[in-house]
Amino acid sequence: MTPLATPLAAQNLTTRAVIHPNLGTSALVEHALKKGEGQLTKHGALLVDTGRFTGRSVKDKYIVRDAETESTINWGNINQPMSPEHFAALKADFLKELEGQDELYVADLFGGSQPEYRVNVRVINQMAWHNLFIRTLLVRPTAEELASFVPEYTIINLPSFKADPERHGCRSDTVIAVSFTEKLILIGNTEYSGEMKKGVFGLLNYLLPAQGVMPMHCSANIGADGKSAIFFGLSGTGKTTLSADASRTLIGDDEHGWSDTAVFNFEGGCYAKMINLSAEGEPEIYATTQMFGTILENVTMDPATRELDFTDGSKTENTRGAYPIEFIPNTSEKNLGPAPSNVIMLTADAFGVLPPIARLTPDQAMYYFLSGYTAKVAGTEIGVTEPEATFSTCFGAAFMPRHPSVYGNLLKERIAKGGAQCWLVNTGWTGGKYGTGSRMPIKATRALLNAVLDGKMDAVEFRKDPNFGFEVPVFVPALAEAGLDQTILDPRSTWADGAEYDATAKKLVQLFIDNFAQFEAHVDEGVKNAAPAPATVAA
Image 1 (cartoon, helix red, strand yellow):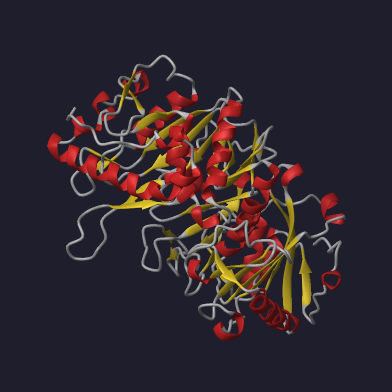
Image 2 (cartoon, rainbow, N blue to C red):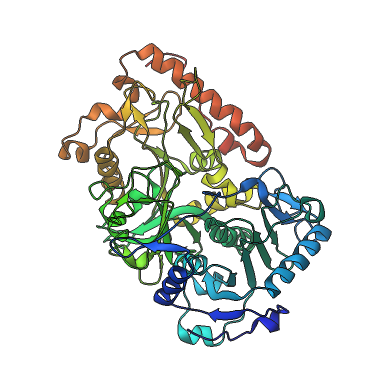
């Protein structure tokens, strides 16, 4: 326990509660168990249930619309406005609820690992395991840093608080409200811990562009040659898995900043999906589930043996594990590395059209970054057999308060400054779309990625894809070395019916074009010309 250098009273926060300041892992686990907030698994991880919310409550999140944010926020379905008057009422009621608490857990933490760009965040929790979660996920200050810690932003997370839609200007009794002016985030009536972490991401995604730093929803690692790589990708594309490679030093798995001098982790921990996790497929992540200090959310456990069942998605498919980054072997000591040499955009193409890897020009990189494409497999509804395309702007629209073009232009600038090579990697389907084809072998993805990261793609011959215009390797020795057939590089050749491939490719190209229409007014000609176009003659 480290006392608060800045007491709550100095922030005009009053409460009768017993304050538990800056508790360590063991103490917080003890408190969580004592309060019945979780159970210990066979190997010592803390297992918790997040209640009725097993993911972020996107429709209940608001940003206060005031003089500070009026012209800087990209208002819409993701960044929903709340009036200053409604926020004032919400804050007053939150502080009243805070006042009446019996126990509170307070952690002083950093958002961001590069000292010049980090923010001081204070998190106040009702629940011990929430405090443990955020302490695990953010950057933990040293005792010396805590001794002079002054909070810049404060998060108050009260699952017991129920909002009043009429009084507070929100949709339901659950609310997540962000005021950049008051530097305050209020989270009420949800036990899903990820709201806190995403709140900090939102802060940094808002603050850093004004300082010329590119905030990114990506993972990052460093090779033995000292060169770093970043991996963009939506959920299910393999971002966490592919970046947790024991032969490379992990910088982080979720959000980073790209400054003139470094790529730096926003966090000091990882938050990995647990569904269908296995020791064979993801040994580094699996090992963390057997460590004291890991928090497992909504994973099924046998009550008698305390053994975990990672295949059970009956509560949610979004089962999660939170653990300190140092639980992964070979991690960066300071959570940062040099500016990236390779930028990798991951997509899980359920249409089976995209090649396993393609090289992008800076203009194409901005195009595919703004598109943020992946595809979900066909749903369970009767008659729905087609994969569903998903475009999540900048591979992380949910965390980006400013207009997407701000982040797209920053990426293009950063690539131009540092000369990074850019790649599009398909971890989705080959040999046909979902239902006909098969999942891209992870062995092939790893072989191609390693060839990129080891600089072995420089001598490889490339062809121009007739639909998408990017460059695709013709023959990669690393595939042969891994005992894999080169035909996988040409998606059309893996389909039984070439004409069906052409028709599906044409459809996907059109989906890209339709989606990009929203950005055309905000990008230059080079980026517009990077758009795909249907092949005029079948290959």
